[in-house]
Image (cartoon, rainbow, N blue to C red; front, side, top):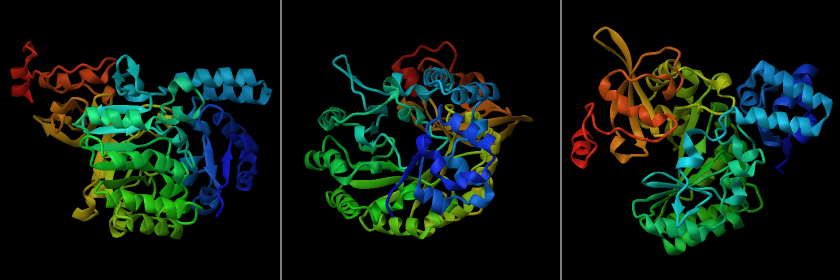
Length: 451
């Protein structure tokens, strides 16, 4: 199938949208002026159940919904669109976007490394073992997810965009940081690039094998949104050859696949693509946030994890939706997410219990909701760092007061005095009070005793 993209400029070419009332289409178009919209003919023709609009989960996953904006903001941008005043549309869209936390968890302020007073744009280094790289030509996708926490990459504001084409800078950085074992090539979607561009970034890594690099990860939604990338595209065979070159070199290759709903895995096209990728020696790991309107169903998660194991994939993460963009539309409480996860995980075998969740990717690290516990007659969340900006925090368990309405770490309060240090880093600064006891000096011995 030949790839055909649909954006806000040609949304009206999607004939099935005529199933919606005109007012709904107008409001959807208005939301697309604020949040990025892009889909394609595979998603429209193969994945969406057009007899179940607007409730179909893949429609919700890929098409902007009016409820994603507060009613007042929606009326404002809808009126601007109807006026045809492009400057007014641009001004109001920008104003709304800046109120939606476009770069959550300190991505730009805290994760981008600096060398000799130069910011290494397009590189992020939050966790000691893993570096992220954003290839310039891969900062788009075959289709955009409505929940995407990197939506600011796609709205044309350069100061919010992360991208680089300097592979030598990346390699030099990895050489200087022997703690780095994993490189995640991400976006956008690197698999949107033609293979010759992917080669341009990966071949120097295979040639130089910098530092202690042992794993190349590629974050992609292509297995869901355009599986032909691995089977029928003009350079699909060359891409698979490149994957084999990575694994033949002794490097691990992990494809970090985003499967948000079981239906994305049920087409023959997806099955063929998965088979082709696995044949190269790559491992496919599967992750997704849990989202209202799309996948807030324990039975669906259980079936999806079972299918992943059956197909030889590794269930990896269930994330809580990040605090950015139209989060309020998708948000489940931590209580709801934990109970859905627990109900789902009970239905699968140990091979599927590799999945971790629900996990919040916060400013200080990935925080797992590990349980809801009763202590002395009171309810608490049991939380754990499964990854952290400060390595001493990894695998640390701490507690928060139970709040049935809490949806993010910033909604929680520490349960006990010894838990307060775990909440400091979630605020505007990034500072950890490692000592466990109030007033303890923050010296090396105190940190050792604490962590």
